[in-house]
Amino acid sequence: MPIVDGPQVFEMLKSEEDSKDIPVVFLTGNGTREGVLRVMELGPAGYVLKGATKQELQAKIKSVLAKHGKGN
Figure 1 (cartoon, rainbow, N blue to C red):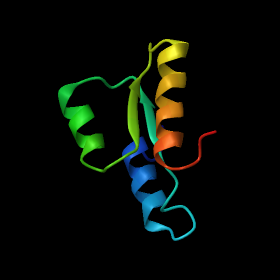
Figure 2: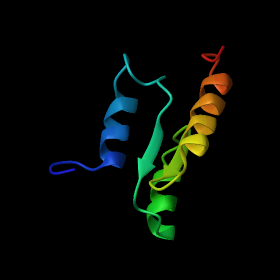
Figure 3: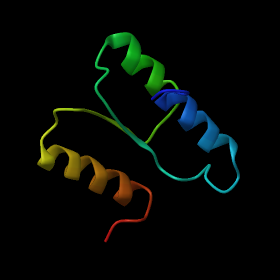
Figure 4: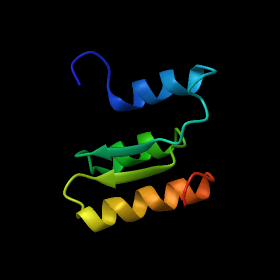
């Protein structure tokens, strides 16, 4: 992202009253240990690496929605 990165956007979302409770799942190509740790320390609802299968991505989203009371 040209101006801010995903973790910065996540921190901005969490600092706003209207968006602080929205569950966020990171979809990223950064699979380095440092990159994953940086994001996970922020407390997102999940983390998926690009290259994950459609089924893996769907399973993660369903899991997050169910955990946050938004799934069917």
